[in-house]
Length: 409
Picture (cartoon, rainbow, N blue to C red):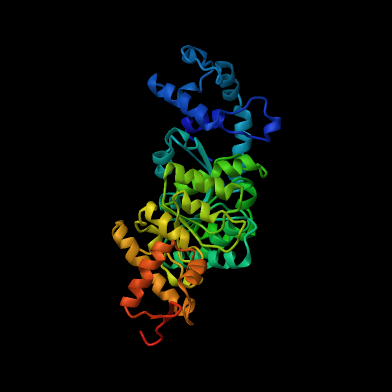
């Protein structure tokens, strides 16, 4: 594995070459490296300049309470460990990208700036790291219907030449990656652990050889599972993509935290699959700025997940209340050209009308419809009046009820 001098220095300063418990000094974190790299730049120094017999004079003006000069010198003195680790990883087909490399993913630098990982370990087609695509994420213990939905969405993305970005964990992540690869699509897998093991796994071998897959990790390639790393890698999934879809978010854990972090920083639009699971936090993500998508993967193109969603305030008023309004084949986040409230209301009304063939197949009162749809009474009243005017509904009297007009088609 050929490394530039700058890459060697960055690896020495920021990476583990063995289990953390066996390291005598802790490598610099992303934030610590960011501060130090900025200082190097301000002092017209390159990381490569530190690879001299005694770099102490170059560090004379460096002062940081957490990143001491002694710590930097100790990290730089691990050349033998670096050489052994690189030889082992190279034999397994791994490569290394550092922030100083020209082919480091620009999306990470642009969106995360100094918090972008100083080093990415990887295997497979590194060109895919520049492709963007759709991040598909969800719980490890998702139900079978969610896994099937995930596979179908990923297969559709593959058919539409959209790269799928996910986390490589069992459950939704793995279903998304395998679903896309089964249809000849391209995939970016951001691993929180065990990259070395994944690089040699039969599960991914053919896709890696065919250039359809890239697996990357900012962590020690032989690291086992660590909850902190799993949480930390979520931001990289979102930032390597152009849009994101949460299939199922549990009440706690990486899926929820990653989605909330994306909403906070607004890296990419967040779409959420409706679910009937009372324990799921999908609705919470919509109230915080996510957008509902169709729960029937056969009814939409992945293109709509890259379109401009309606204004969040309108979604909170209409879409959140309609989570249980439509049958699985009818619930949707409409694709809109504009983002005005009038467009949003018009599109949601269309799907309300579609649902009436089931909701009002027999005479039903406004109160019963309100209970079944969870619509705000004033919104329901407006749409019922409009549906009557449009001859979609018959209004019956004594008592007042509504019934779908079967011949309106």
